[in-house]
Amino acid sequence: MKAVRLEDWGYQQISLGEHAFSLEKIKQVFAHISESAAKRALARLSKKGKILSIHKGYYLIIDPQHQAKGILPPTLFINDLMKFLNRPYYVGLLSAAQMHGAAHHAPQEFYVFTNRPAMRPLQKKGVKVNFIGINKIPEDFLEERKTESGYIKISSPVLTAVDLIDFDYVVGRISRVSTVLNELAELLKPEDFNSRLLEIAKVATLQRLGYIFEHIIGQPQLAEALYSLLLGSGKKLQRIKLNSHGKAEGFPVDKKWQVIINATIEIDE
Image 1 (cartoon, rainbow, N blue to C red):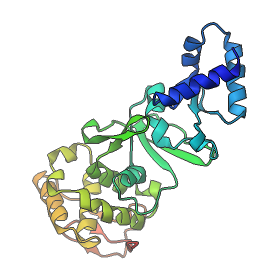
Image 2 (image 1 turned 90 degrees about the vertical axis):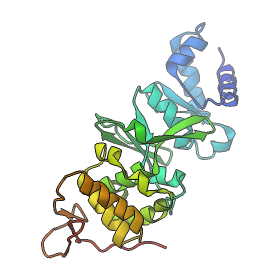
Image 3 (image 1 turned 180 degrees about the horizontal axis):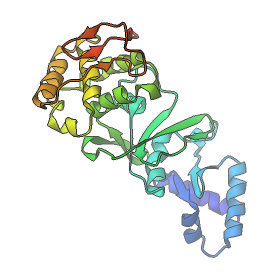
């Protein structure tokens, strides 16, 4: 079969809302040609910039709109890629915040949580997908968002807030996290901070988040809801650092939240 027919099939897939395919799919659709012939056809299309291999045996179909860049936005392929890899996932951190309208600046990387073992970052054509391995995907705290190619799973606003604190070292300084939280807070409600949150969030993470709500971004209602949750849990608050990677000695302590204030936080306007 000539490559052009394979190319035509690819564009038919785009019209059906499909933006990627696997080598196994090609073997099924073009069962009358040999695997080596199929691979040669795929190689020709790849050289022409019509398709792009982003994982062994998995290809993106590069539509005319994205051929200048040579790759699709991750929102168009991440759901199908994770299905292909048989991995649970959700889009999180700054990428989720952006979808919630709270990223402040467009993130340079696309952040995806999946189960352990962690996956290597995917870097192609100037796009980087950063995979973060965790023990369990918190399905109850996920939302679905419609894209041109279907739906993707993203963290809810409250899970996004928790993850930003917990994985601040992934996205940058605590000031950057606080800047995003300042915008994300508009989507949060006091009732979001209930006992279910204690099942997925560390107490230390909630202490830092509460301190930032109260003293940095001026959200007293959210702060009090978090404080009530922590008090009601029966767990004694341990002294923790605001900047978890900084030094602890020589800094003042917020007695309410038991947070060592070892960082100066500045919110970007």
